[in-house]
Image (tube, rainbow, N blue to C red):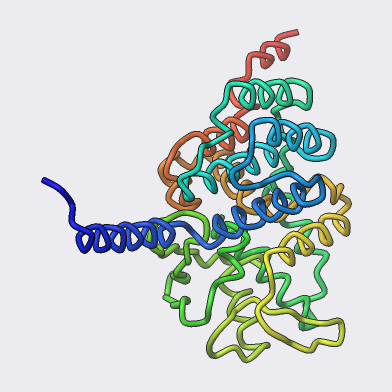
Length: 314
């Protein structure tokens, strides 16, 4: 059975719709990363007067060589993956699948080291020290206290934390339910709960105090605040990292060892140290697989039932 021209046109149109659905399935952050990586490769190709689409194996190898002098292994792998996806979407011969590319990546991994330097988790004692350094008589201090405590309690990604709107928060007798907009995964939004605690480090009280101070009735919860106390639009995930580093330094910790992710890993690690079970930790962090959570649990449990405990018998 032959396909008539009109049928071919309809088929092409339907395939275009399918591609549109596939693109829509990707998270905004993922698409931004792909676009940024592809622009970087296109600019490099333009500077070196070589073709980017379709790219030759030799071009990608030269690009890899240049990347290896400046970037981390994880960044290099992501950029090569973006080149691969770009060629697949345009139905072009994929240079990344060549053995030479994979061999070069393996070589870079061995020379540069595949292990990334993980930032330290903010443990409960660290969080207390950091919060104690906050001047809560100021507007920015109230925001920062809420940001740290809620960020820790939710154990969400930085991008998810700053994406919270007032409409996403429902205060209850026991605490607060907060809808989290999934910015990295393809899952539907989820609702996380945080509990009231009877101390000066209650995330629910800190959040309510900030909302009242900033008079936030709708829209973004965590906003930019200048040194004069003026409140502006929604802040960015970079602010989370800056706030963490600021109070880590004030608390006498090394700010270079901490980042925005330290809040998320801190809750998981601290919860493990306090004896919380794996399922409870995964429910709060939102991890679907045990791989990353196991790293946090192992870190939190490393001093329990440790074989070196026998030295106590000396």
